[in-house]
Amino acid sequence: ETGVTQSPTHLIKTRGQQVTLRCSSQSGHNTVSWYQQALGQGPQFIFQYYREEENGRGNFPPRFSGLQFPNYSSELNVNALELDDSALYLCASSSSRGPETQYFGPGTRLLVL
Amino acid sequence: QKEVEQNSGPLSVPEGAIASLNCTYSDRGSQSFFWYRQYSGKSPELIMSIYSNGDKEDGRFTAQLNKASQYVSLLIRDSQPSDSATYLCALERLGGSARQLTFGSGTQLTVLP
Image (cartoon, rainbow over all chains, first blue to last red; front, side, top):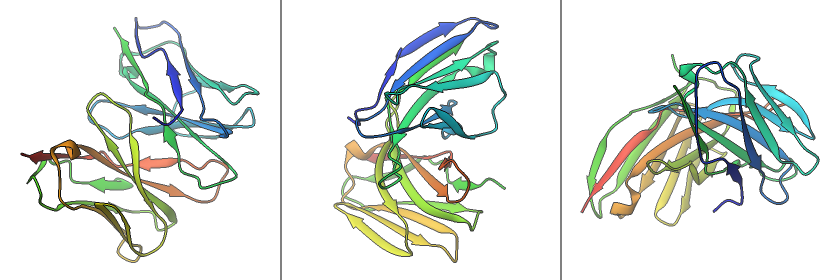
């Protein structure tokens, strides 16, 4: 167990809807990264938050947005859901002061119908 | 060319044998390398990190890095059925504000009893 938690564990939405996924980082970690993992693929970097600001983004459209709160927890929001958004969404936390190893939460499995 | 290439497998080895997993990468700016294990339906779990050329051993696992050849590998000695999983190779590039991981698609390993 990494100490990173995510909610919900599973979610079913329909195309066009909006979804919010949540992540609590490991104690002592101030950086949260979000990844999308499609079936049979490796995780792809969506964005990273540090001190409540987005400080890096992968190749994802603006309808993917996020927040980080003062307690370092984070949200991933996806608007106008598309069928291809169906994936496992992973949150990873790390510490900017120590080794940059990222520890993953259990993930949220999103199905878009 | 993908940034991180792994043989998708499946790779099957008998119990007690050495499993050898390989990964090549294209970006010479990559500085940190990681092996994650992912059981079916679960999130990635960090096994090893390696930053310098050479070998790094941790129990039954040995990571090998050759930056000149842009090659990183993972050896699993005395393979056990519980090692059956998908193994993800990841790299982290320094520079820029976000420390993002770039993953390969993973190699599926099956250890046969």
